[in-house]
Structure formats: structure tokens, C-alpha cells
Image 1 (cartoon, rainbow, N blue to C red):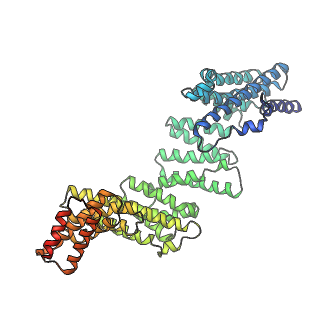
Image 2: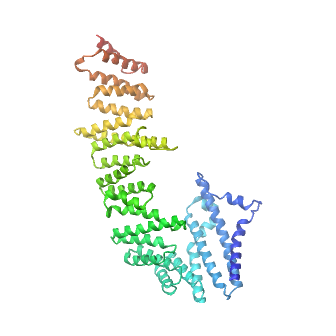
Length: 533
């Protein structure tokens, strides 16, 4: 074993020495390696760096392979040869990854320019075949090699890469049956289970995933539980699948508590899938309690959002409403509440219940007010941004709905519900809008809607607001004239009050000031005189 350790040091030093060499210009390796690091925002350069890095790795692999081959020749027939052959096979498998990288970049213009011959000649399959040949050779020549289980397992894995799944499965079975002491037994069960799962042989797959439960110390243990859950689901045993996922979550908690290898933690994936399956097993009113038992408090909101989306996808809008409102009741000050209010708005729209949409929009506006209980509950540096984000989300939905309902009403004016809802949505959008030009465009559309509904007096007021604040010439001209026209149409029987007459004069003056050559100037000035007469 001392000789073996020494040989490993030689192989490792081959890799290390390559990176420690200075280039022809005398630059040090750290500087050279620094230049290959990924840099955010430099996508084209990063592609070049990735190619250069892989070329360096490939060269180091070539050196390591040559060194291993030399050592094999030197120690041919000795006890350490099997170890060296195994190491050589592993190097070929690693080399296959590099070759795959070049294969994937075969259509890349910069890759072809940078390393034309390397990209053209790349063949990951060739490297894997070389590894397989070595694995087969080790089995024939070194039947009592202490790592023969590793050789057989790696051979199975390599065969899978070559698409030889039947042969791979036989090799995995040999590990399970002939080397039951091996730490690779659960890995072999997982590999066979995965192949069966992909082939939709779910009962066979389940046998292997269940077998992994006998090895709780194995690194594949949590993945076995996880795959067992999905297999049960595909066998239409959703309740059992949920229990399996709960086991994965509990295992993940132990991983965190005991600070084990984070790669063993599939807790988040399992929780996400529990949200996916939830509606098939349990009632919507119990969703909050269920996930409170299994998830962290900061995770519950996102999980319930996912549950609600699944319900909506199946047209179960009532169930979605229950899930979301339960969360709001339990966590009225959570930062996720604006998103949930927004979801509730659109859920009612999916249900085509416009009065409820409007009512929810109004609740949404009250939520975003700086004096609301939710707003006061936001603390720290992000509080202002969270409140502003609430307002932005509200306004985005309000204007989108207002425009949608307006279009629907214009196509079918016999449904006043659309117009009523659109008016209220425009009002909500405009109430707290600080983006003047966007607000002016929406306000003009709102005024147009009221004009079409013969609500001339309020329409005139809204047109005037646009006319006095907009910087857009065409919008300004249209809104100033429309304010005059709307006021005129609001007067019944041509009976003007003093206040109305004064406002009319003010609107005409506004128009003339901004449009001294306006096409309606003579008309509106004549009307002023006519009213006075």
C-alpha cells in the first residue's frame, strides 16, 4: 500500500505541475489561471475563457494518462498494476467529459477558431470505449482485486454512457449479488431503478428504490426515497408518495441539524413536489397546517402559492381562493401578501366575477396604503421598497384589467358590468400614480370611457387634468378640446350657471394659450361669445 500511495502522489503531482508551470513569457500560473475565471457581464469573453480552461484541463489529462501508462509498463504484473489500470480508466472517463465539451461546441464559431483541430477530432465515445476495455481487462486479469466491485460498477456506468443498458444492468446486478459487502450496492440499486423508471417499469423500479432504504448511511439514500415517491405517484398511489416525500424532508432536516454533506439534502425538492401532489390527497383548507408541519416558516408562502397554481391549472378557482386566504389570515404582515392579493384579483377574473375582482382591487389598494396594518408591519431597510412594490403590483393589474374590460365593453356595450368595472379599475390605477405621463394616458382613456357613457361632466374634469399636465402635443390638444366639448354636452337645455360659464371660459383660455393656431380656436371662442349673449 505504501507503493500505491507513492504512485498516487506521482499521478497527482503530474496534474499539479502542469498548472504550476509558467508560460513562455514568464507569467506565473496564478495570473494565468486568474485570467480564466468567469466574469459577470462578459458573456462572449466567458465563452472563450471556458474553452481555454477546458483546453488546459485536457492537456493535464493527457499528461496524467501518459504518466499512468508509463507506470503501468514499469509495474506490469505487480500487485499495484490493477490500481494503476483502474486509475487509467478513470482518467479516460474524465477525458470523455472534456471531449463532450468540445463536441457540444462544434457549431460554435469562436470555438472552431480557437481550437479547430481539437474541436473537430473530439470523441467522448472513443474515451469511454477505452475505459470499458480497461475495466474488462481488469476483471479478466485481476479477479481478486480488492476494488473489483468498483471496477464492475464503473464499467456499468460507462456502458450506460454508450447506450448499452442491458449490459449495464447485468453489471450492476453482479455488484448487488456477488459483492453485497460493497458500499456501491445502494448505488447499483439506484442505477437499475433509474433505468426501470425511464422505461416506465415502475413496479421494478420501486423494488430497487425500496432496497436503498436498507442503507441509511449511503450517499444515495435520500435520492432513493425521493425516487420511490415519484414511482409511487406514477403507480397512482399519491398518498403513499406524499409519505415518502415527508421522509425525504425529515432526512433533510437531520442533514441540516447534523451539518452533513449538503448534497444529501433533497428537502426543498421534496417540499416542492409535496405542493404538486397536495391537492390530490388533502383538502385546501388544511394546506397551511400541513406545510407548517414540514416546511420552514419562510417557505410556507411560496409552497402555498404553488399549491394554488396547481388548483387553478385544473380550474379549481374556489380551492385556490381558500388556500391563499388561509395564508393571509395566518400571516397578515408577511412580505408575500401583496403577491397573494394580486393572485386573488386574477383568480376572481378567471372566475369571471367582476364585482369580486373590483372589491379585491379595492382591498389591494387599502393594503398598499402607508397606514395599513400590513405596511406598518414591514420593517428594516426594505420596508419602503416593499410598500412601493405593492403599489406597482396593484397598478399593473388595475390598468391591465381596466384596458381589458374597456375593450370587452366596446365590443359589446350591452354589458354595462364591463364598463362599470373598467371605470373603477381606472380610478384605482390613477389614485396613487406618480408616473405623470403614464397616468395621463390612462386618465385620457378613462375620460373617453365616461364620454362614451354620456357622463360628460366628470369626463370634462378628467380631460382637463390631462390637458393641464401633459407634455405630449397631440394628447394635450385632444384632451383640452375634449374638456370643452364634454362640458358643453353636460349642459342641459343650454342653461349655464355662472360657475359653468366661468369654467368654460377657463378651458377655452387653456386651449387658446397652448394652441394659438389650433383648428378649433374659432369655434370655441365663438361659443364663449354665444354663451355670454
